[in-house]
Length: 307
Image 1 (spheres, helix red, strand yellow):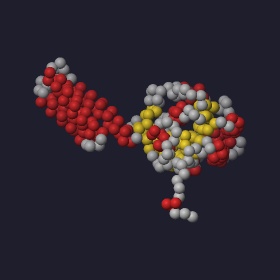
Image 2 (cartoon, helix red, strand yellow):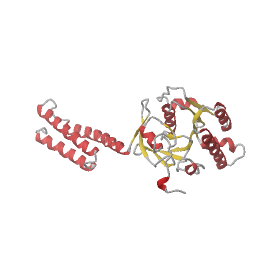
Image 3 (cartoon, rainbow, N blue to C red):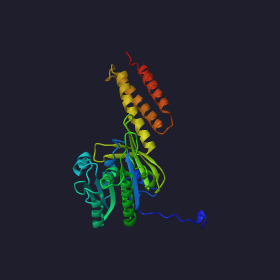
Image 4 (cartoon, one colour):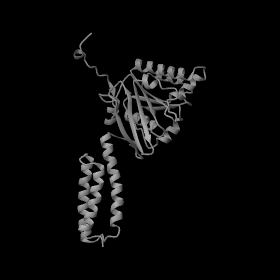
């Protein structure tokens, strides 16, 4: 027995992802700590497959295998075509390569050089054992036990994907949200067009949350802190609103006149100043729009543009 003051913190080695925000999401020290099993869930369209392939692309120094049982390998590649993996340590396997989970794990054990396993999904893989007479929950617990034993013995990392029902249920895998070392959940709110990724449980560090976008470029996923996302969101809203407002008010003005050029310069400087103050939370969003509209009309009359 010892005093808390006498307890020494032991930092567990981790694999760095290479994205500062993602690294901070997974652990206090940054990156995914070795010998951990992460339960990854997400709503439809959240981008679970894209995230997993991005992790494989960023972690180039260690061999990773994506065991895809929800889709065949060529469909995964087609769905994530813009994300090109340039190193040779990322692998993918599907039901045609290894029809049964046991066969897949025998291959992994036989190689002995794989450090990161990604499996999609625990529900689909469980069917292998249900066909042999196991109950669905027993099958998923067996898969969890096999993977836990592997990551503890080899000091590896496991990312086990779980599918959700339309009601947000874990389809029999709810125990994983409690038993896994970490539970990471991705959400896509299609009404607000907002995507978030957060740790619901995390033995590697504090609970945290990021915002992200799915891009058309090779970057595919871009992550934001809450402050950066809100600032970016204000900027987009402002640009759209301002463009529409200015076009509406100035559509009949003589844009070659000296008055209009002076109006444009002063209004642009004012709007940039207001945008900066709003981004820094110096003024409320509602005040921000009010000041912009008021200034726009003030300058229109000041420069005698409304003729």
